[in-house]
Image (cartoon, rainbow, N blue to C red; front, side):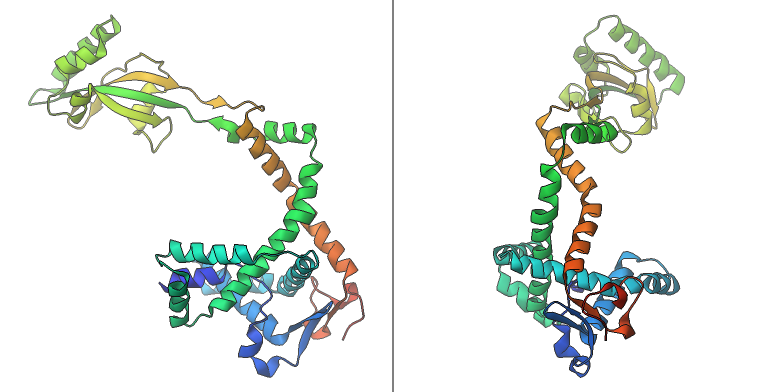
Length: 348
C-alpha cells in the first residue's frame, strides 16, 4: 500500500512546504526568500528539493541513478523560482477570497474511496500508520486547488472569453484527426474446420460457399448449412460482434480482409490454424470527421483552443504577479531563474 500513499503526497510537487519547518527547526532561522508577507526558509527549500527529487525518480523509473542525478542537477535551479511562483498564486487566491475547503474534503474522500476505504477516518488512520500526516496532504491539496482557482479565474476565463470564431475554426482545422470517429464493422462468420481433410479440399469448398453467397444465397442460411456445429458463433447465426477497424480490435488478417469491403460483402476464405473462415460484413461505418457545428466538437474546441494558449498566458500572469510583489532572495540561494537582481526590495 506504500506506493499509492507515496504517489498521493506528490500530487502537488513543489507546493510551498511550510510543514517542513517542524521537522528541520534548526534551519528555520535562515531565510531563503521573502515573498510579500511570507517567507521561504531553508527547511522549506530543502523539503521542496527532496520532494522534487523523489518525484523525479518516480517519473524516471527505469533510468540509472546517474541519469536521474544529472536531470536533477539540471532542473534544481528552477525549484526556488517555482516555490515563489506557487506562493504568489496562493497569496492571490486568498486575496480573491477563494474557498476551496469543500473541494479539499471531496478530493480526500474520493482518494479514500478509490483506495478501498469506507470512511475518510479509516484512510487518514492508514496514512498515519505509514508515517504520513493527513494534514500535510490536505495542505498540499489546498495549495493546488488555490492555484487552480486563480488560473481559472484570472487566466483561463480571459483566454476563453477572447477566443474568436477564427481562433476556434483554426484549432478545429489543425486538429481534425481528434474529431474523426473511428471506423467500425459488425461482422459474422462461417467456419469450416479441416476435420481430417486437406487444406486444398476445404479451400475449394469454402470458395464455392463464397460464390453462392455472392450470387445471392442468404448468409444466415449458409451459416446453418455449412458452419461447424461446434463453433460458438453458429448458435448466434454466425455473429461475432462489432469491432473498431484498428489493430488490437481485430486480428491483422481479418482487418486486412474487410478494410476495403462494404456492408453486405463477404471475404475470400481466410486460412486459420484449424480451418477456414469466411467473414460477412453485416454493417460497416467508415471513419468520419465530426462537423465543426457538433456540440461535442464545440466543447472540445473551446477547451483545446483555451489550453493551447494557457502556458504562455500563465507565464505572463505569474510574471505580472512577481513584478508587482515584494520578492527578496538570499544571495546564497540565487540562481539564473531566481536571482536578486530581478526582485523588488533589495537583496540580503
